[in-house]
Length: 161
Image (cartoon, rainbow, N blue to C red):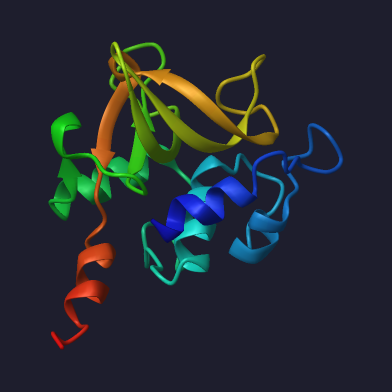
């Protein structure tokens, strides 16, 4: 999936200066210097040719809870069994029904774990760590998986040959 390919190319990218939340993703989004996990996901989708559209902002989403509310209303939530590479993951770290972080699902790892590509994370700070990383995550920490309709809308416009 092109979205995961683009996200994987960004692994190792860090905000500059450290602790500033300033990135090329925020500059593109028009909201630099704020927590940027959702902005990173929006950027990856846009770069892959699947813009998410207005989810609180014209280029996608910055707030994880805003994104969850949007995706619930639009019917884009999918089950763990139906999640695919390139789909969006929304996390709830402390099981308080609030989304704390987001990333891009890459693959199932078995034994209750999966791999995701996330912006603004680190081993020391899950949700505001300042780096794009590949992370091993537990399905138990997932608030929702999302398969955005933009993925289906664009591919359904390609005529059968």
